[in-house]
Length: 99
Image (tube, rainbow, N blue to C red; front, side, top):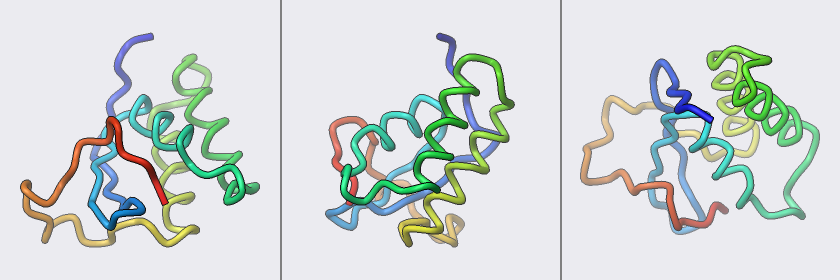
């Protein structure tokens, strides 16, 4: 699997209210894999399938990014104004648990 970077990152908040930068299909898949099972639903499933399809070159990276962004918006974790986010506020996605 090659790195599949997004055209621009998506910023989300995790359970600790830390801001995470999701910058690639791999980041999105990792975040989704850690998402609590009891909070998964149809929009989660769509985002997961889209990211898996992009990883396998069956969907564009932009398609996966849009699906992940829709998921993040639907569960209320998307940061709407990444322009105001300072680099020190962003936490790496590895090892962090989502909401």
